[in-house]
Every structure is written in C-alpha cells, then in structure tokens.
Image (cartoon, rainbow, N blue to C red; front, top):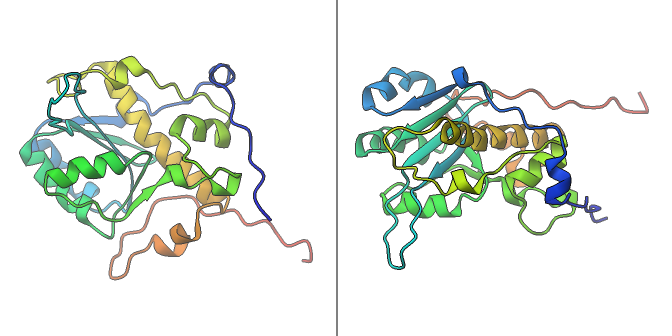
Length: 231
C-alpha cells in the first residue's frame, strides 16, 4: 500500500506557523584558526553523527570560477561548529569527511560533494535527507523548510538575502552565523525525528549507524516503540 502524501503547506501558510527555535548563540562556535580546531579535536573526531552543510561566496559573473566552500558547518543536538575555511582547516576536517565511521547528514549535499571533490576530499557516510520522505508519499526531494513544517509544524525561515551573501568575508555577521547554524541543527532534528518515527529508508536503518570496528555511537534518543495491542 502506497503512503498517502501529506499536502505541502504554501509559503504563506508556513510563515504563520510557530517559529523554529535555533541553537542559542552560546551553542554556536565560529572557528577561524587551526589552533581553535585543535582545541576541539577530541570532541570533533569522536562524534559519530553530524548535521552537515557548506556555504560559498556566490558567483554572479558568467564564467566566474567557484572557489568555495568558504564556510563548513557541522552540528550536533547540542552545538554547531562553523569553520571559516582555509587550507589548514580543510586539512584538519578531511579525516571527518573521509571517515566511514562518522555519519554526515544534510539536505542538497550533491553540490557540496562536488566542491569537496575539487579540493581532493571524498565524502563518505553521507545521508541525503531530501530523499527520505517517501514514507510521506513524496517521490520528489523535500527541502529543509518543508521538512520542518511536515515533521514539527514549525516555520523554518530561509532568507535568500543571507543565503546569497558573502560567505568568504573575514567576519561573519550575526545573521550569517545564525543561518549557517540553523541549517545543520535543523538537519539533525529532522534525522532524529524520522528515526524516532521509524520512517527512514531501510538503507539508513538503525543497524547502519554503528560502523564496524569503532566505538563511535550517535547521540540520539531511542526510538519509542508502542506496546503491542495483544500484550
């Protein structure tokens, strides 16, 4: 039996929903130097599950070469890490992205993978959440804004002005910082809710979240199982 599709709300309807609650500013860490990264190396290298995204300075001229990513975002349920990219930081992050033990989840990661590949980094253990809504009857991809509305009945604001801003600037604005953190934190919440509801595709089943020969375990709440009516 096919899943019954839940109708997507219009932009106007979504804008009237309760506002999505992002991480607080003290839960967002902006990292600009290798020394700052090394100070967090243990917690970063021992985290099994990250929300993931990247931002690049937009190109507006035909033929202009994309030099991104300029910002890389990783998030857990408790914290968002925003890395302002330079060669040293990219090299520091490479083991996380190439790791088969550390799962990276997000929306629209195809372009990110392309940019990383140009930098000589292959992304492994990636889960594309936009394709995880077949249980709701959607054959096409679902974006983060709609996913938050479907699962939590909340309005996840997406500002085009901020998304197309200069992500290569030395000092990010508070609006850029909040936007970048929300994209990856929101992905973590969507993943956790799909897992809790048992609606992730089988290839992303719970058994795949503990990779062989590793002690890394994702920090997620257990799936709630309803008692059998026959009990």
